[in-house]
Amino acid sequence: MSRIILIFGIAAGLIVAVPMSLMLANAEPGSAATSHFTGYLIMLLALSLIFFGVKRLRDRELGGAIRFVPALLAGLGISAVAGVIYVIAWEITMAVTDFAFIDSYSTTAVEAARAKGVSAADVEALIVKMDEFRRQYANPFFRLPMTFIEIFPVGVLISLISAALLRNSRFLPARKPAS
Image (cartoon, rainbow, N blue to C red; front, side):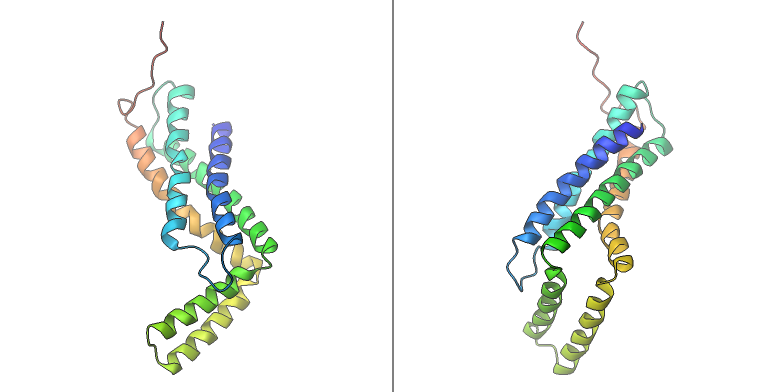
């Protein structure tokens, strides 16, 4: 079981980390870097490997049947490994780009507020808030869990769905080898 968790977790982590790192590294200075929609779509695509990992566990190692809790735990294990890979890739990307993301993020938030016609006082309050966030983000004890929490809830959701579906041995049953 741990082998499946590692294989599918590393694969999911790399599938989400590589495109996101490339998008961030190639982003225009002062831009928002990537959209939330694109980022979560990539996470959803990568974390779909949870389903395939749990199915492989059920079909190949457990004889075609798995209970909800073991399926959920396997999915959460894959999610955790993928999350750790994602955090490592994010840290490498931050180091390579000289932590330019946080400046870009702050600038984009302030410019968006100005474009919406927010009052000068509210823009100043946002600038203060972004400066505080920039200070907090420089602390790895703030940044690392925050990055992990970007991806892990998506993995929890997919793990729950996968466990609920795959506990039924008639749902996508294992193929029998041709004789």
